[in-house]
Length: 308
Length: 277
Image (cartoon, rainbow over all chains, first blue to last red):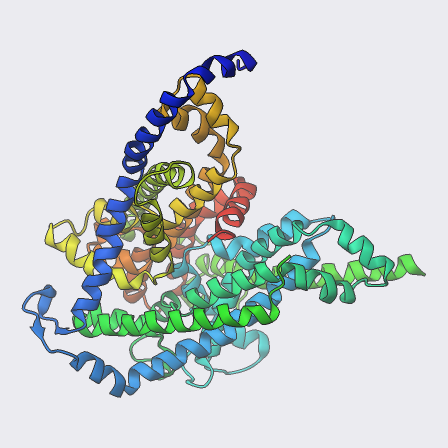
């Protein structure tokens, strides 16, 4: 279709063609992004400012009859031990769930990153929890954890109150998070592992680096950018845990104060108690925590992430 | 000697993989086994019943009658359909513009996109809720779709896809007399099909899994998607586990069947999109 002649002919008209093209780039560029930008402004930018604005109000019913109360919500937030406990619960959950999930996913990915029988089947099975609705997942785990009739206590011959003992419940919640996220993290690691050139391992084998040595000297450093990426995104989503708490921890559960997360508390204040002003203040706290932790990770990455 | 050691390693790896597979499958298996039991069987401790004495479909029939699953499937399907269509359509245009066109304010606009990606979504929920209620649109499909009308993440993903395409394609199209819209529609857009498919799968899966927004915005039983309906029914049937598990199974099955058929596309789609998040 195209040959040298076409280029030569159009070459003559290049100048005017370019300016027309450039002018129309301005027009088309804006036309192309307008739906997205309009959507982002209406759905995200404006709501974010609105949420921040709301923190200075005590909300009346259905968002009407707001009363300006200045910084009172923030003062209340700082004194609210329930909020700080929820923040601590959230951090504890994240600190347990994320590293364990990443470590297990990494091991499984390394095992699966070779030609072997059943590779596709294993991969499909590990990824399965990702496909299930969180509500269904939470319900079946609640049933597995049931202290009287649950499968877990039967299998282990125990009488543990998995989700109503305040000392244990948060670990049980973390286990669900680990179970749900291993497959997802593993798929990302597998994609990262496939980008590592085989020659590195061949060269490593000559120097005697095989098995675990190859893992620590070759795989881990070369995969570290992907590990860092998974770490940052998992921590952010860990800090937003809501579904499993909402589904599993009933209001009367004695372990609720020691397991409820910051987003769960946000939901309660905003949509159950109808105090959207205070709910917004809680979510601003979450935003600050996420920014701080992400910034810290960005800073620490220089110490361990290896870029070519 | 060496090969027997290798064989041992391989067996050990398989053993570990099988143990993990069992851990992944047990909750699903328990869901299925419980759903076919009677309430008495499911709460029998002495003896503990693993397999139902008879495979009864009573629980399925009851929840199917009580929960209007056809309507829930329809709501979920519409939610997924519109979110996928809107996200893919708006993102592919915006992604192309950000990757390949020069226009005033481009960098500022793109930094808005990136900025939005880093913000936790809960911060938008209250104002989004107030907006939808202000126009009296709660309990509609539109309300379910609303937060997903555009996608900052999709825009970012599509921009990456367009940036990886060779520049001379466009040059050739332009010299052939295509204008920007034609170049985009006929030459460039078709080349990003696989990324677009990845974005579609990613969007669909997260629309299906979304819980808080549907709970908040559509409180009528008739307008809920599966996720919210399951969460709501839990309160009503609190101790009838065969029925809770039957409902969970009915709700999860379409997605799981789809997954079993399009396993490769699912995993690849998540790997491409998730990896660039």
